[in-house]
Length: 462
Ligand code: SAH
Ligand code: SF4
Ligand code: F3S
Image (cartoon, rainbow, N blue to C red; front, side, top):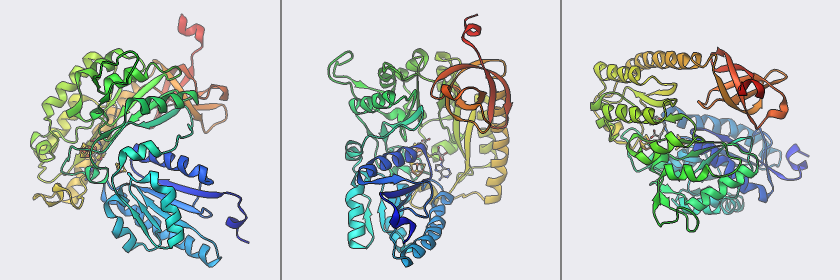
């Protein structure tokens, strides 16, 4: 008898690619499958169900899916030969963008399910097993998705919470408006209930997620303080969630420069539970390129917004996303990106070579930049960003920072936590401190983390 048949319940293996929203969705899918008897396993080999939660943002990300499906095909073929079964599902943004193509290219796939149809998973799975054919579900029903997804179990003291999904910005390089659909905001009550449930489970830090999280808008909750029938923005939501007992830290991502409003800046300045860290992608520093990207802001407006935010919250650390080699980007345009980075001084950043995505306006633009040129620019930009990140980390030496302990470290007696600036901090501390926040004096930096020592209460008070 095979290993799979001896098992009591069923098992699911989920591989997650791409952004935090996919991480959140994977957790929710696991939560939805649990009542159906599926336990999560760490490897695909003996799983009854394998879900690839995919990302379509760059060509490389999308292609990874097909190579993974190639590996899974071998596993599944061997399993079927043994009289066993294995259902393979492709979820996420590749599913949404290339559903029929996946089924044509990879017949091993039983089910294709887009990000707005996860709540239908139980029915879809039943159909996929019953009909033994491919099932494709890529309709947009994001509100229904949130209503019907089961509550999830917290996994550690920090958790993601999706509050907004989709994007109306249509940057000319980006697939997200096509894969995630139009901007939809979840209601205050649903978000608050989920945040409360996480807090009860010991979660100390929540990161509110949205493709454009600061485009979030919803009606103020009925009853209680603040119920004047007004519409809230992200600033009001953060202040509201900050009242939840047990929650100590609130973050949000990803923000768009176009939707930063005064309410959010004021909340960043006043609400202590809002962490002093803002991910605010700019993509490029040349106004000509920003216009061609349809970003809806200039370099100058971005810089002045950051000045305003820094005025409200002087200790704020910034991070950003950058694309080099967008069509039409000259050396001079690229120099403008470097100049903007010099001006802002980032604590961390992500940077990418422009990837031509089918169906986006950028893909058809003249002036596509040669791969070699993109490589050169990326190397220069990353060197600058890395120097800024290292300098920011070094500047923490000697400071005492509150650290949220998230997991055991590699060495016995060590814990790994997060600083307010999202830096990983390694500290010698007892296991009993997992899930708590304590002051740590930063003593050293390693390439990817800070190292520090616990500060005892008496020392802090002194
Ligand atoms: N909603 C967020 C992030 C979207 S995707 C925002 O508006 O900023 C994350 C990052 O991937 C983007 O910020 C961008 O820097 C990068 N990206 C998106 N499309 C890309 C493409 N076609 N080629 C290279 N990088 C891309
Ligand atoms: Fe993509 Fe632009 Fe929307 Fe961000 S704002 S998800 S980069 S289209
Ligand atoms: Fe990728 Fe979709 Fe997120 S394309 S970055 S998984 S929204």
